[in-house]
Image (cartoon, rainbow, N blue to C red; front, side):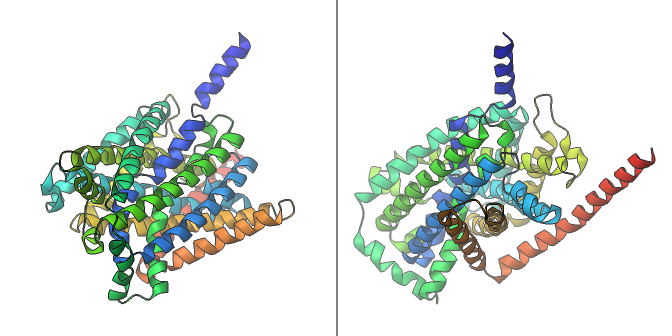
Length: 448
């Protein structure tokens, strides 16, 4: 009886198993990014697929690094805990700060993607920016409230939504192969040249966009203290989920590039629906749109679930205001969820006058750079942590992950890098304020 009680308590404390962890990885990577990214990449022609392939290899290197790091340090917080363990509180804070920003920018980008595909049913959303913003807010706050009901409920929703989201990713690309025209694919190489890009700059710029499709590969490492047997479960889920998504992405982009003329694809707000209309007719397209919308809901559910966790983990280490330690009766960090969603609201409010595709591209580029910094620090930390114990092969993978992260950051451009730099600078006063509070509390404790 005592053993059963202990197992029940463990199950309650760690409600997420392997498939929930896999669904977090897949769910956070496959949000709405893959459904809009072909349109964003189309301007660089088929050269973008080279950038995408290089990004897939970089993502697999990063997934392996996170898997090994989690086996060594199976704690909540993901990239933040690894950076702090090696480089100290300030670097740990900056990693977590940027990663937290990425989480709620990811939610905003996913909400924009959902609204874009909702335009299949409400065409006015393409042109009425205020209406599109209102729809986005309904999505964000509905999912936030679901997660406020409890992490177990949010995790169960994640598994269901991840299962549904794979439907259009299987059906549409396979159907696109029957409409594949080599001219669409090979002639699109010249599209990037028409825009004044060199071969290298087109590949580089495409890679900077493509990394967004892999952001979230470390998702299962963040709520580690909620995952059963995290040392084994997280490592397997991270590598398996990333490899599966990489294969799906490459197949999908090749199929869509061949099925739709490049200039048509570059201006499409709903590329998967366009292919569905081509292959099956107008009556099937709404079904595909519904599946994409459900996929987006799975993605935003994963992002919102995580953006409540990061401030709580930071607060435990005295790097964020202590108010974020407060949780509901079942341990849900409600304040972190609400603050993150409020910031999503401000971000979408500030950019709602742009087109849906413009909003999406700007937000994903900023979010990608913020995350790449966290990936870079984590990979560097892995080299330090395992410099005397791991094999040459592991060190080579870490080095490739570091090189890839720096290369992808450089491809974002000076405007985005400046914006991200300001984002990090804004966080430093908060860090100093919290650390001052901690030191003052310690002095007060000694006096008492």
